[in-house]
Length: 374
Image 1 (tube, rainbow, N blue to C red):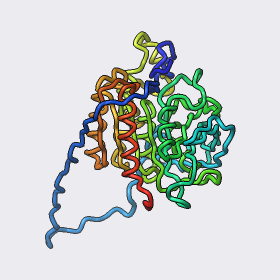
Image 2: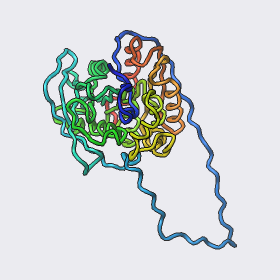
Image 3: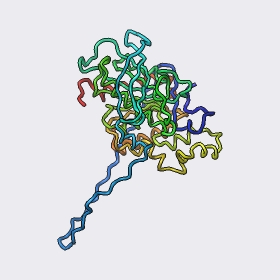
Image 4: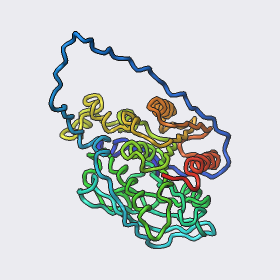
């Protein structure tokens, strides 16, 4: 069963995760949106020195900044995240609207020069000729929610979204992430608080752009994350500004990892056990708040250059609605073009799925119009 946390998992396995649930595709209600106006502040003028003032001696060397914690969004941003070599495997499904393939592509442990990884996934390619002709299809990389890797199977978690997008003319690449399905295992994925998942979705963009088998418009590739994948999406946008054309987050986890830890950790685990599991790695959020802010996307929102659509259910009891409000408010305050849409639905999006997907497709088409230049 899909869920944000397996209650019997170890404390390390209870790092911020999220459910990728299935639901019935039926028409839903009309959403409302929240788009708070961005805040602004006037800069304070500085006084010009008078003629009588002695000139201040300037340092000959600028002070150097300390390197970022190697496990942080800042370190992810500093890494040269590479990818490519998209390989089409077996055909999973053929419909009048699209063909679905098993695929793999290349990623790295933590950027260029680190251990290579092979990531598995599922690719849906629309039938016929791309509307842009030689320009290629618009594309969406899909970042799924939390499913225990021990039980996860290739392409699980966003099957409905993948098919819906392909039916409407988008190449859709579902990324399994490292340590999932047929992907290479990364032994440090837990210790690195799953920042590698964001590296994998960035690698997926390079794989699509470089593919000779699938013609994709390199300037029209968006990232769509669900639940835990919403957090993956925000970190990837912050770490790699300009790589994606837009970001979408459905039922997303918090943009502050300490809140995710508090929400999803095992409630029956004694504090001593949690501390023992984190000893030599990271302190708990109350003991090392700087670390937990460093692995969060919110402090890096000012680096995001792409428009972001957040979609959330009013009755979501997995990822609380206040998280979505706080994230959207912080995005807007950071100058990000962001919108939050509400639906009368829960975390899995059953009754409102079609309405929410229609809104998502409209957003993607508006932000990635045919003929757009990067």
